[in-house]
Image 1 (cartoon, one colour):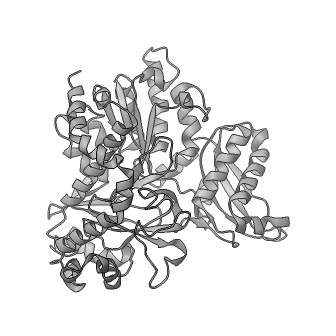
Image 2 (cartoon, rainbow, N blue to C red):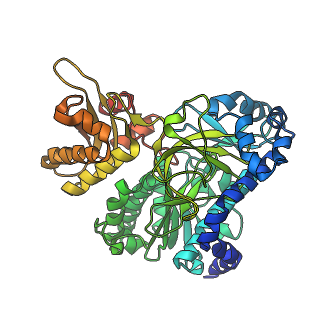
Length: 528
């Protein structure tokens, strides 16, 4: 197919980039220097904005390399969205120029987030370019993995985005889901391989969108898919059903899309979905062999504020930080994030195994901005390029009794228990059960269950054991049930979480099921 020539052109354009990324010793040595250079450029570019004049960005940008970082930290505090809300609103609502970023930012990503109310994140032209560069790195790493871009572009590339409703105010400022801002920018020749196309992508009703995409792509030669694992799995199942409805003798996705090469996913942790994706792809949920999996999977770490990292080694869960895409990163130890003046570290100053909250300075006017994710580093310079894993959100935890459980530990325990009893599970969330007369407090897990009901208690015991193996505070509270009783489980049918998310107006796209909360609002809504 002639569109394979797009792959040829992209391969030639990315050869130098792929070679640069492959030189890991050099990228380990220069990661910090590149980040300081990015900071200097950001400060210089925004020197004449209101925030730039207030905090002396012009002076900071002119400082020598060994002074610029400490001076920047002294000039601006680490801050969350509330600190910027009114300043950002002046540009978004009234088109006031030069507030946090030069000129008027015309595009704004609306996100409810997972830790608060509605937020409006600026997406400047420079940020669009940053996102584009990060997205192209997906294909640069695909080349490093040995994939032929010509083979990918000979078929269709499926992008499973969120709601694409975009509102435009009287000043011409656009607000919507990030995918809604990006979809209209797809031009020829990419429009020739992009699916589902703007007509379907612009649908805002998620169930209708899934059905339309399944109906369309069941007849197409899809070779690349990008989307959150949870919604991609739902689509995969519907595509197989749609193909069978059309008379095809298929039982797996591999039979529908035999040339699918690459599945790019992010936004939620993948292990809970791994067996079900393998089952719909190959008919086997065996996670120990590559033969049951889509040929290549690549995890990305996107945020509305900007791309953070992506997987650069096949089979290695570490996500390599984007150091040169117009974003400056800092990392604050999670136990200091609520301090008045927390310490912050660059990517060449962090330590492996320490939990950090991600702080970003962006090419759209966010300065030392807390995005809320908690990460741990697997690789740090000079041992290699900075690679991280997302372990939770700094406001997503369960700590009603001093157990200090985070998302990663709960997800790990669910996966371990699932594997122990060979159960089929769907979505889940956890919350504390508060003490009552004669009963100790406990952890409650609400989970979509497709396994044998007789295995539930065995699953629960394995879940408890896995949590104790990961968290010493939980183990202490569980010892002889002095501080906490054994965990409890509430079984709900498959699809309950989707129905609940739909009732909240958060079905589809980048919306995520909260894996845990330090309150019972979510579990009571799911079980009430």
